[in-house]
Amino acid sequence: MSSNNNIQLIVRINGTLPDITTLGNEELSERAAEVKNQNIISNTSCSIFSKSDTNQIFHILVDVGQGIVQSIEKGSSNLGFETSSSFQYLPDIVLITHAHNDHIKELPILTEKAINNSRKLNIFCTAECYNQILKEFPQLSSIANESTNISFNIVQPNSTFNINQFLPISISTQTRNF
Image 1 (spheres, one colour):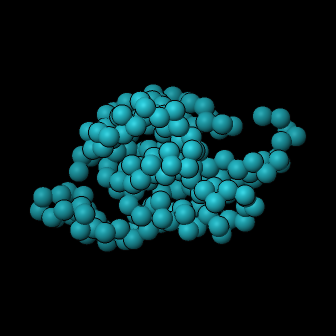
Image 2: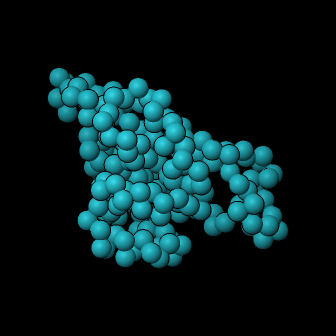
Image 3: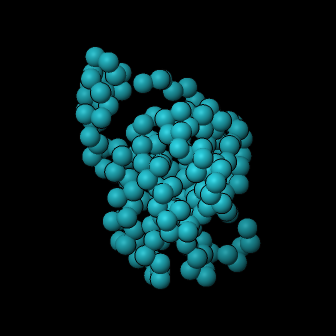
């Protein structure tokens, strides 16, 4: 990146109150028990917006759990970006950290909005995460195959990958199955 380029970064936490009844019964769902025991009161996601000198806006969305699409629709107008597009809230990139329902629940809604608004949406996740997403939402396989606007990009654990002007590193961690 040239030293002449000034990139403004804005990070927005897309927090929503979860409907914990969707996690299931505490006796049957380890995640529901964890949420109740730890008094977790938010389902969060993060948006990273970069704005270049030419006022181009690039939006990376990290995770897309329940209520996140509505949260970014409502909250993006408060960021101070001047845009002619009413669909600027739609991300260019979605990073999925792992495939628990509280991280992927609204991925089908987001892909549908991207297609309906002729927006390209690149989804980045590990192969394991991708397979879990397709198990939960099998319709996304045909959408990704048929649409030129939606693409899944597999990242390798512990490797750097390229997203616009960013070079994130995928860090492999152990998560429990809930």
